[in-house]
Image (cartoon, rainbow, N blue to C red):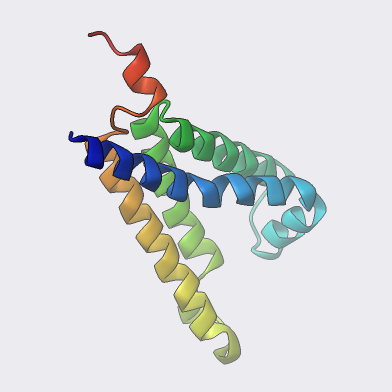
Length: 136
């Protein structure tokens, strides 16, 4: 990779990871609301799902930002984001007033998952913790 590509992938990793880190901290701050929202979707064990969600979002987001186990984190977050799109942004089943916003959120999640798959395929670049631990 060229220097420009390495800085570009660093910026991309930070931007992709930021949404997950902020969302994870938001779920910690509003834990009861998060559990309630998960329960409203009829998912089992909403408290457990909330904790697992926080771990995936914070762990995966920080992994992306730092470039540590980037490919694995990107694949995990791609799957997580696709599941979240279907479960929480099912615009096809939403009330008419919420359909447009849910469709936007659904498509946003698809786009994020696409970015994650690209990152999983091409890796974190040289400006990452992974590049520091890799053999020369």
